[in-house]
Image (tube, rainbow, N blue to C red; front, side):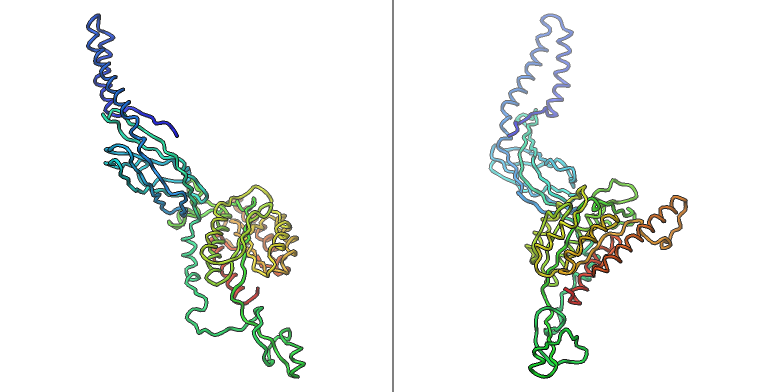
Length: 470
């Protein structure tokens, strides 16, 4: 327990200024017995102050402040921290309190709050308004309490330890608004409950061959028994496994900028690392995490099982595909503390781990930055380990300058601008060549702008599900 501390209150400072200072000055300049009255005044003030301090040091001992052990919140959204302040001592005219907050939080209101008339044996529940500015895991470790002494000459302070964990999750409000039409979908709600037949993997029934049926669906044994062509039909699979694979190696720290003038006011994605100016800055990993949670919500609405995998130089987090609100919270708790690691990705180790862990065919949505040609080549070489067993989709955020040379609407004004546009064209050409190489392995590479990453990823997932490609 941190010991109590006492500091002079304003009345004591006024007494020192108006009484003690003149008396001390008189003592210095007086001669002989004339010093005695001034000395008695200084002594009287000192005795009263010390008596007041001695009688008041125990006042904060009866004060306790408690907070919840775990608080969940969203970045950029107001967080009212509930505090319970109890007085197990004597009546107090007022109590001031404050919390030591992490650097990535901001106090919405008064940093030091005050409660009036806290009687003995009573308690008050108040809210301490905070605003989290960055996702991650934080702790509230200490709170400070203050009240005045019995005579009002001192402020007696006490530090109270707290054990409160605060989990700050990404803010998905803006992304959900962009995909509002997708979140309004309810599968086949409103349609007739008719069993659909398609190219799934669950056997439905045998029927006579009809023109247009695929020869691979012909059941030759049944055809031989019946002496007429017979076709197998399959029931559409309702539940499929979808895994999001997030790369948080060095390339995931690539910055994404947005003009401050055009950024939505309620979109906190681009404010986390921004330090003012005309640009709001975030990282590609932030977009990957937003996309993962959005896809988890959509997959749950579609009735699929959703899993999560993260890796850098090795696989570090693996969550088996399930569904339900509890599973969504588990995925969210697994990814909200991810940060970029200054290492190169090891794709071969990742593919081996996926091959060992995932025995059932699944859709793998890989969020990986392939803007570096060497990284893209390593990924291409490791991909054959899983691309035949699973359906793989790859998405990344288009680099800011990666556009065809003559696609930009603005004309470069300087020679340096011309060279920058040319460099961006070469980068776009390399990404295009990477996409063509992956297409030969049956893997599609999406390179949308950062605003469209979630929409394109969700759209490709829904297209795969509609076509029953898994």
